[in-house]
Image 1 (cartoon, rainbow over the protein chains, first blue to last red):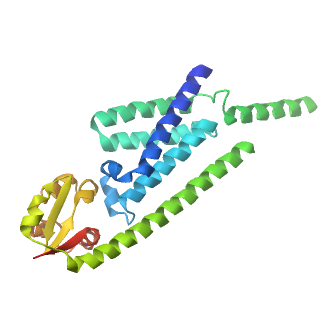
Image 2: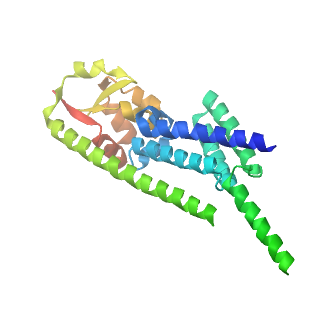
Image 3: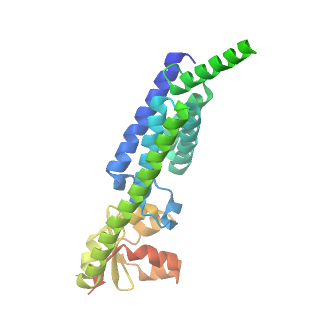
Length: 135
Length: 119
C-alpha cells in the first residue's frame, strides 16, 4: 500500500469514528438498540455505556488523526468492529465486517509519512545509525 | 518519548471523560429515580390507559398491579426483545412470573421502569 492510500484509509477511519462517537455522546438513546443483550445485567445504564463507547471512538479517532500507535489502535478498532458485526448481524453486520477488514489492513501496514509514528521510527533509526557509526 | 506523551494524554482524557460520564449518568439517574419514587404512589392508571401503549416504540405493561414503561428496556432485555414486545399494552404478571419467578435481577431491572400503579 502506498503512502497516499494509507493516509486516505487512516483519515477515513478517523472521520468515521469521530462522527459515530459524537452521535453516541450527543444522543445515546438512539443507539440503545445496538447494545448487546448481556449489558442488561450491568449496573450501568445503557445510555452511559453508549456514551462511554462514543468517547472511546473519539479518542481512538484522535489517535488515528495524530498517527500515534496507529497500528495498535487500528487493530483494537478492527476487533471492536468484528464484535459489533457479530452482534448486529444482517446488512449492518456485513458492512461492519468489511470495515473491520479495512481496519486490519491499516493495522498491517507501515505508518504513513504524516504520522507521529513515522517520525518516531525515523528518530529511532537515526539514533541507531549514530550509535553504530560511533562504535 | 513524544509519542508516549501524546498517548498518555489521550488515555488520561478517556479515563477522565469516562469518569465524568458515569458520574453525570448517576446524577441524572438519581433525579429520575427520585422523580419515579415520588410518582410511584401518585400516578394511577387504568388498564385502558396501558392498552394504548402497545407498540415497541411506546411500551407500557402491568406487573403485580404496578405500571412499567418498558420502551427503553426492549432492546436491552437479556432474553431478547420479543418477550418484552409481547408484554406491551397488557397485564403481563403471569408471563413475567412464569419466566422470572423470584429472580432478584429481574425485579431490580424493573424498579427504575416503574411509572405508577393500576387503579
